[in-house]
Image (cartoon, rainbow over all chains, first blue to last red; front, side, top):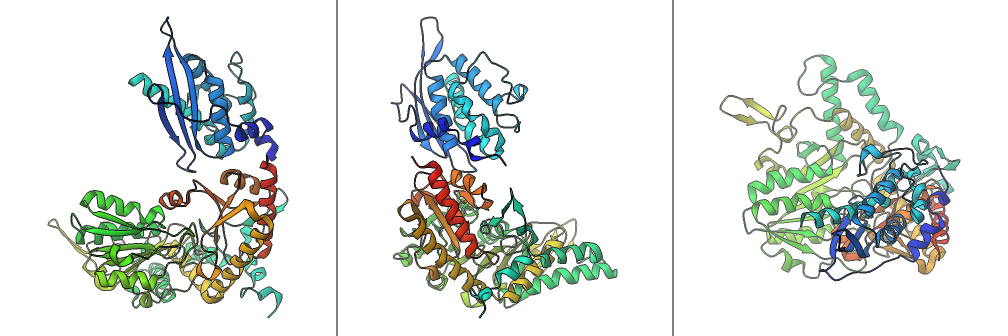
Length: 166
Length: 416
């Protein structure tokens, strides 16, 4: 099996120990959504503020992360919050697809579009740099932990779904 | 007494019966500390099942040919051995089910629907596994029952200070004999007595008790006792419900089908007697035979010796882990080994249970992270997940030493 350093890269531990955008936002204006991993009890609570600009483009103006869980789920949530803050919903969704495709080498049922499943070492959408999120690449070698890494992204997708239907 | 039997069991000899434990993971000796989730099984159990499949397999209670008779005898012999093991007054009180969960669902569906009505109160405890919560919540939602809860103390035992008040007017008490999270042993006598004086029926989840401690269902005085095969060296797919004959007799069937009837006409059906009434369809035949062999194995070791071994190992573990990890470790449950089973729910400061488990896996140590299907209890303890190490007859102090060393490694790896 792979070494611990493949999974727990230093940048992951940094986000785990010093999570970005940790906390809560007032609802409204923010939208609150909880995500659970029923197998392990990990929990991510997202507070997301979305505003439309003058052209009607919706943008994530603020995001906070609450909840508890393992280093992978919590660092992934921290990185996700930093990556999507200030992005348009369209950009955030594209980032989500890129991230999930990186996570999908062993698992075809972790959510997202199965059509995007591809080799983890060849990012299909190289124009979307994942930044810190690249550090989570090693998670695919530990299949049971993939759900930890994708929990916050699935919760974000739920936020957007709920906003779109409200 | 030789060194090998210092704990009352000859673990070196026992381990030879469990070939699955004799393997290396990345060159390291496998340390299996997850028996509370599911135990391993000895050669004797595997051989008994193989022998049936190789020489004596047929459906039971049907065929006239000799092999069918041998299969039926093997199946019913397993029932007799289970009945003797739990000291049941009659083997017809031993119903084979799929697992412990199905045994409890049998009671909630059959006894519950026939005997409870809207407004009735039932009493559960905060120590329960979801298997002894959700069936009752489903019934409560269906019949509009009041659900009362017996709380737990800070050290993870049942808090019985207001037991009589909670039991007042209640129709049923469902409790675990031993917590799968804190290891706390429940005072069965006191609980059964309180239920009796309130006129309530008792349902005991003994899934963690029966594999580890002697049980006498007659002396316990409860009405129903449920347990499962795969936690007691037996195979998966087989569980047991023991119930008082008078209660079982009066209950309607749970599942309908072949094997549970005396007669079927276009107008209706007449149910079989006990225990067939509750064993609809082809039962888990080889699994029952495997469970019978597991019972034989445990009886050969002696349940008193098993218990003594686990108390000593738990005492050693509590001492060793506290000495080695000091302030950074929290072990939930009672401090006194004699009042608990060999289950240690561990919190390591600054390291989530999943990460603990991941680090331990690199040393080939198998433990269970998570909520252990006991979310109400976990919420009360104020933890979302613990890393649970649990012991059985094949574990010894070397396993505890490996656990302690790996926990230190996990702590160091994640230390800020």
